[in-house]
Length: 322
Image: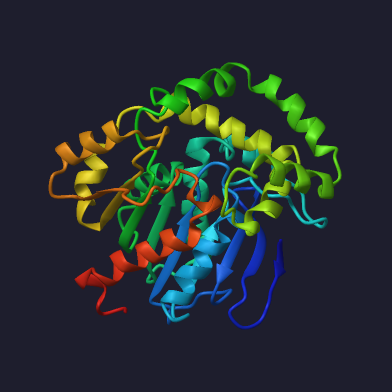
């Protein structure tokens, strides 16, 4: 079953589909359906929460700066979106439970299943990961080495020692040991009318001077209850499972990878940048000089997209496509 919301021209399309038995939102700029004539797809793999609406400005800028020639899609994490009235959170409960689709491993398999069903095998991919989305991309490339990945952009990559990071030390107890306690305030917030949720979100984020207004409504959806619970469940697994950096996967795909670390990122501190830079001195590994925060979508989606476009345009291997 599929529910589609479409607009004409260069406006976004939003599809709600079931993938691996769970509700999934796909935000699309460009064609809604791909065929063999589409040579390149830009696919964004989000952080956690994996809400595609957070990336609207980022995706829109990418699409525009490449002259609207290539589709740019973002696929949500399974269960990180509010289903339309005609759909449920899960289509097949047994399938979702068996594959642990809301867990970290299940989310990796979810993305591979999405590609198998919705993207022609001959279409080349530019994968753009954010935070845990970078870990997912490395796993995708390892599990399916035949994916036609031209480039994988790793923005603020949480690919190692998450629980040992400054933010991980704060969040691990809650996500791993007190997650069910956190469900209560989320449940209470979910009972509020959307207008009040929106006002509260704006109040909480009022300290961000250039807050992107497009992130407010997706945040309202996140407070539906089930979405936040699924995000916290996934987060708990991240703390337990994202341990050592997968140097084998990085080495195998080094020429395709661009890493971008934050200069004041509490999820992947500068020490992690220095370590990977030392281990892979010939890799394209960058340290932010622009003061972008880990959650760049809050106020710098356009600027980060412009930066990504510069990297890709400067890569000689892309001349055939661009």
